[in-house]
Length: 594
Image 1 (cartoon, one colour):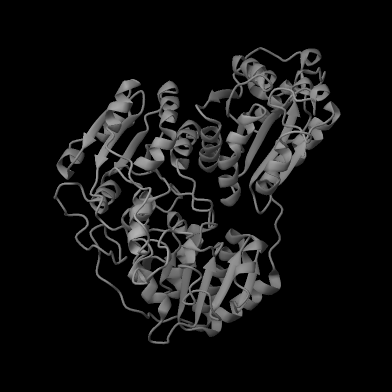
Image 2: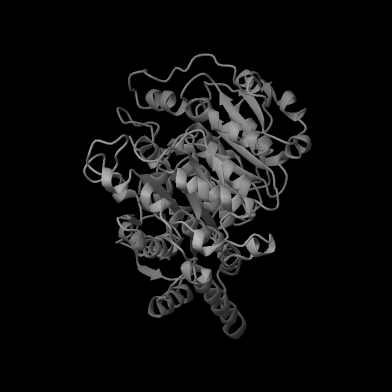
């Protein structure tokens, strides 16, 4: 039994424990605080167990407005806390509605437990309402290709073992969502016992470092003069050691769009983002026009399309040494000089020690190289496409100015979530901070619109420090999932929602223009999002200029008792820094993935 229930003085009578209670007690043992979902008939036994848990001070239900929103919330909760994100849905359409959020977590390796209900076992295959068994709409089959573990609990004795297997699979490398589907009659059945497990064993990481590969890497570093680093999204817990190594090697470094959250963007050696919405300074470093660059260390990098500028040969070439904790990532760098697999914190601690010894014992040094640009308006050396981005005062509001202003004015430790679409491009290029603690969030694996709206709510609920939370979303994404803002209101979360209101699906419109495609399907019409928010009791303001934004009292917003929405009227004609390196191409889609 978890300690909290003992402290509350309400011990669970094991003779009254259902299998739903047993499942919930496992979540309590794991320290999970919330299960995000939408109730329904078949999942009701789980919600009953969650209600009993909440009365004891344990894990409780948070009701989303749509199951995809619930999955996005679980995603954000997992990112913020490092714990297992948990979402649930009833059978049939409840489960299918989860699918996009689950697939998004799968693409970004976010650990998540997905619980779906089934109709009672005797009703399988008999055309029962919302039958999702293998003889009807096969939910287990549907989830097969976007989960790390996926199983139907067909007998009550299976539930505990399958739950343990699922939880352990969620945190293994590569991490990701796991799914168990449980018939409602099993959830209701008496279990008669409580878990007897050590929670740390369920989420324990098993990882070995390739010592031979590491020794080869040390030898390569000792022989090279000019080294550059490419920082991917998988650098959590190794960031400080990587920065230290870069300094010791005088190695300028760049990041992928998602990797920028692990670097100090004002570091004198940082040259910006390479890839989608990246900086010319980063591309210039890797293009190596002077022929000086000996090695590029790609660290924690999945090497997908958006992070590599379409698998550009400037990065993917024989100079590359790929260092990662996931073997699967090496499949995209078969031409690399060396692959090194293992724990990144352990690898880079060893590398820092070796380089320091080399400097001390043999006077080994790595000389400066590469051009250095002047400081931009936020104190970094990334070369912006619009050098005057900070200072525009024209109306309508320039989106690049908005993101510069946010980078300058948001408090330290703000959690920043940028949604799919043009919010990505402006945030990657112009939202630059010195923090390197992973508080900048984008989800580019699947690129789900409206992800940020749910994820920021899950993160805010999981953040014990109650740091500021900001979600920037386009009007297209907001129209898909605007109702989830009422969850933030119900949970009293002081989240700042910023809607980029230009009346169009911006990435679609600009992609069509840049690719000489037909102009079709991007118009959204004129919508007052501030009035929409006010209609459900949320504070909201229309922002049309820099001056209006600067008058907003951020401290008041982040200490309030609910969310605030800013309806920011941006200039739709401003071309985002989207695939800038190939904008001159004709008859090619400029929309990512197209």
